[in-house]
Image (tube, rainbow, N blue to C red; front, side, top):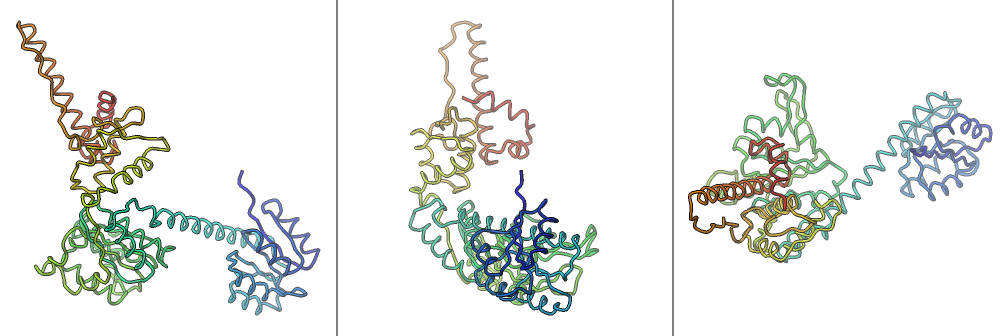
Length: 459
C-alpha cells in the first residue's frame, strides 16, 4: 500500500485548519500547526511533500517563514495562500522560492491541482536525489576494481579534473575502461544531476553522424518527419562522451571544433543556433597525436580536446588486479550466489595476455558461469582461448576387426563434433558477454539451438 503524501499546513485560523483537514485528509496525511515557528520545527524534524502556508499570521509571517526554510536548505514545495488584496506579497514570496500561490477563499479543485503538482515535483526531486547518491556510490573511486599504481593514478587525476568543466581526453586500448572513467568524472562533477550522454563515433555511418550530433528539423532530409534534438542538446547541462573520436571524419571535426568554441549547435535544416552547456569527454583507442602528425586529425581540435589527458593501462600491465576484477564480475553477474574459481581456471585466467582487456575478462567470466556446475568455475568452463592445453581427442586402441574400426570411427567423429561444438559455443557466449540472445544474433544460430547445446554440454 502506497503511503499518503505528507502535507504540512501552517495556518493560524482554526476554522481554516479544520476545513482543510476535512477536505484533504482522505488523500493526504495532513499535519496542521498554527504558527510559523511550529511549522519550521516540524519541517526541520521530518520530510514533507508539500507545505501550504498562510502569508499573514501573528508572529512569524509567511515571508519570514520562506526565508528561514530556504536558509535551512529545505526544498519542499511551498504553496502560499493570501487574501486577494495581498497578491503582491505572494508574488514576492515566489521570488524567494515559493512554488505557487492561491488567493483566499480558494477553490478546492484549484488547491487539489496545486497539491498534486507539488507532490509530483517533490517525489521526482527525491528520486533524483536517490539516483545521484546511487550514481556517486557506484562510481566511487573505491569501487573501480583496481589497485595497480598506474590505474590509481588515472583515477586520482580523474577525480581532480571532475571538479572542473574542462574537456578531458581518455586514451587506452579497447576494453580498458574508458567509459567507466568518463562516468566517474561525470558522477563526481558539478554536472552530476545532468545527463550523461554517449556517442560512439565509429558505430554510426558517416552520413548519419552529423544528425546524431547536432539534431535536425522536420523536412531536413528524406525521412525527417519530425524534429529531433542531437546529442549535444540531450547533454545540455551534463556531459557528452564522444567515444572513438579518432574515427570522426574531417568535415565533422571542423563542425565539432566550432561547437566547442562557440557553445552553440545548429540543427540540420535550421539556421537558428541553440546555446548548449556541455562538458566534453573524448575517448580513443588510437594514437591521436600520431593522427595529427599524419594530417588525419585536426591539430586545433586535438588541442581543444586534450586539455587534460588520461591514459588507461592495459590489463596485461596490471595483472595483480585480476583477483579483484574476477570477484567483482562474479558478484555482478552471480545474482547474489556465492561463486568460486578453482586453481586451474585461475591459473589459465592469469596466463592470458588479454588483447580485449577488462571487457574480455568480463565476457570470459560470464561465459564460464553459463557452463559452471555448483557455482564453481573450472578450467573446462572457460572459453577455449583461456584453456592452456587443448582438450584433444583420445585415440582408441588400434582396431583388430572391421567392426571395431567402424565403432572407433563413430566414437572419434562424435568426440570431434563435441569438441568443436563446445569450442564454438564457449567462444560465441564469450563474444556476446554471456548473453544467449546476442550470441544467437551474432552467429546466426537459432536461440533454441544454442540452448540445446548449452544443456547438452553443461558439466
